[in-house]
Amino acid sequence: MKISAALFISFVLFSAVVLAVEKPLGMEEFTSVNELATAISSYFPTIQGDVTTVQQDMLTVAIGSNEGLKAGVTLTLWRAGREIPHPITGAVLGRTEAEEEIADAEVVEVGEHSSIVRIIKKQKDPKPGDTARLTPNKITLALIPLRPDRVDVVRELGDRLNKQGRFAVLESSKVAVFLKDRAQRDSALIKEMGITLGVEVIAAVDVYPSEGDKLLVTTRLFYADDARPVATVQVRLDLKSKTTEKKVTEILPFNAQLFDVADLEGNGTLHYVFSDGSRLHIFQRESSGWREEWSETQWVTSAEMQYINIDVADINGTGKPEIFVTAMRNEKVISYVMEFQDGSCHRIAEMPGFLRVVKFLGKGNVLIGQDYDPKSFYSGEPRQYIWSDGKYVAGREFRLPRGVDLYGFVVANMEKAHPLLVALNNDDQLMVYSNNNAIWKGEGKYLTPSLTVAKPLEGVDAAFRKSAAEQADKTGEATIFLNIKKFKIKGRILALDMNGNGKEDIFIPQNSSVTGLTDAEIVGLSWTGSRLEQRFSIKNINGIIMDFQVMQRQGVDPQFLVLMNIPGGWFKKDTTQVMSYTVK
Image 1 (cartoon, rainbow, N blue to C red):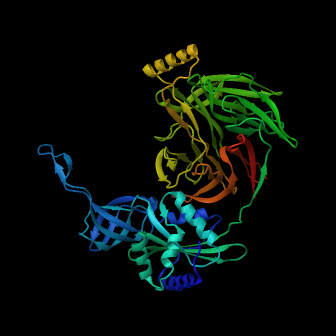
Image 2 (cartoon, helix red, strand yellow; image 1 turned 180 degrees about the vertical axis):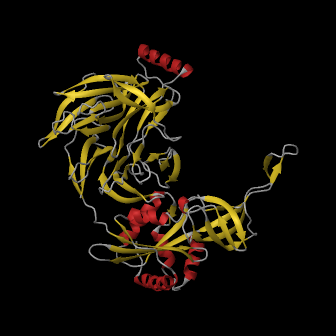
Image 3 (tube, helix red, strand yellow; image 1 turned 120 degrees about the horizontal axis):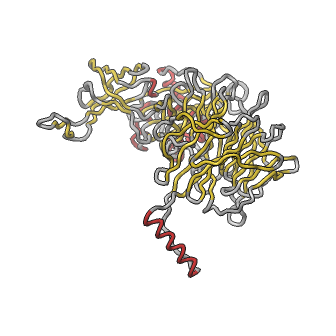
């Protein structure tokens, strides 16, 4: 990103004029650029609500802070076409035409459930029942760095805004070409920029050194069509406030897909439980490297057995954790429970369907299970399992919100009233639920590690596959099978009280969205009361995250253990390692 000193000076002069008429928001402390990107995105939530009252150019709309609305934002007012009633019943059969744009209105006062807006441009007079909306489409945005130093912060901000999915950030080279020969120093420049480059929002970013190694970052947001200020986001950025100590283990002798970690024998020694997809392995890590404690000796193919989930927890109250395994075996889902003792594992239970462990802060571990169905995959309501009379017994229902699978969610104490449920939806976006009602939906997507299993074929498809396989066995020739339907098992999300204040943060892996790139990270998000915002990340994890766990013991810094697949490229095989990140 190259912008001449003259251009920086012109924008410094211009920003000084803007600052005189704007009221900056309160100062916040951030530890990552992604948190700044999230703060900017918070001014442009995808929301809508009805106009409830009209008093000349002042309107009340049924949208408030609970939906993420903030003062300074512009809403567009729309009116639905005229209703066509049934001549006898009066039921609405349809409308005469598509929605009509009525006006633009600026939010001037925000309440919890409703807000006051002022008309700034109108084609028709608004009336109650009109819809106020902030566009759900991606917003085109241009970033203007106001100083020549720390342009890296502005560059990363653009990357983060793009990844969050709410904005389409204009390339910095196009911005530089536009600014090159323009000398004006007022709002006319912003308007011209909006028209010429087709951007809707302009963000002028100023980065100053602050005390210590911190940075003072001021981002002024403008609507490009009329150069009207939206808001000023001013933060103190401490990119070094949390440090991570990285350790890389030796390469595993197999390619692992899932893992968990626990003291299986209650003697203070950590055991790593791995799955390579079709077998289990238990290892200890010593100073000389990995030492195998036990492995399943039953050799099966991935077509016969595919592991779906591994959890380790003490549910039967022996003081030693059990290993809970769920797998697709010969086109049916089964779960079994194992105990490890004296270097050997033995099964203590097996049951049809899915199992997983849900962890509650202050309450311990809860085992839940759900039935399997070949068509829908998950069947019926999940149930909590308890240990009773020497066996695991299904008890009361563990109800999940509609659309939430048994995997890919976590229950977290993020506010005082009651725990909230955080889950990935089918579009890889985070959702937050309270009492099984959705209260927030994130904009960005999280490319978490996941597994894909094949649904069994039925009827004619199954008969065709069997016939084709039998023919291939007789002739020895390859044959073409039907496309097998796939089902995605969502990856792990964790909750952790990082600060010891009884309030948990959410941690989720983020793999690269670009094929061939292996720059992954662990993202930490905090609940503000109305949304999840990023507060922490472990960046530059070189590889593809397959699974992750976190170890937190009294008086010891939290330790993230990340199972990584390291691509070998053209001439080497892929390898698997565990990377350890201690957060200080």
